[in-house]
Image (cartoon, rainbow, N blue to C red; front, side, top):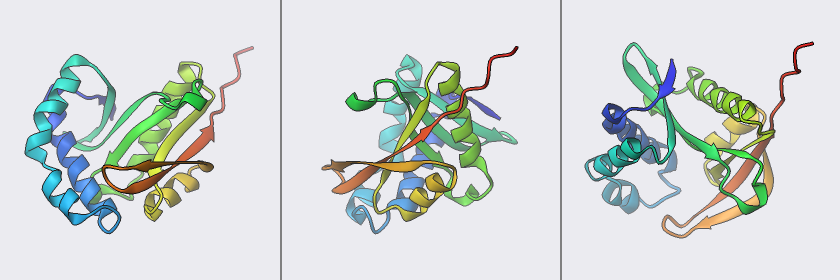
Length: 171
């Protein structure tokens, strides 16, 4: 089931995010950053505050009372894509990948985008993260040539886009 995240979910969400970063970005981002700068303990309180103040739209994927993934979504933050929706973040517990969870989460994001009148969805992916890039390409996303250098982690991200199909209005 996909549902909105609650404050009680904060520690599990942060755990998934940190472990996800360490698994996906090892060799792309420095070990010092991944294993020293990133800390579950340091991120829980700020994340609880985000959830408490409803500053971001965050959803979790939960089965059998286990949160297996989360995503953050919203209006696209890019100046050249003011009429697009964005998957700001998607993390599936690394030990639970390849079960279709990520695809379900993205389709849920796209459904929300269509309901809100958007015809395009975007996601930013680290350029050297081949596994994630292949995943997004497999489900219909394409790089549009836009790149961004992330100075704090010394990595380049690329933007992927997907046109969304609107359901025809009932006759």
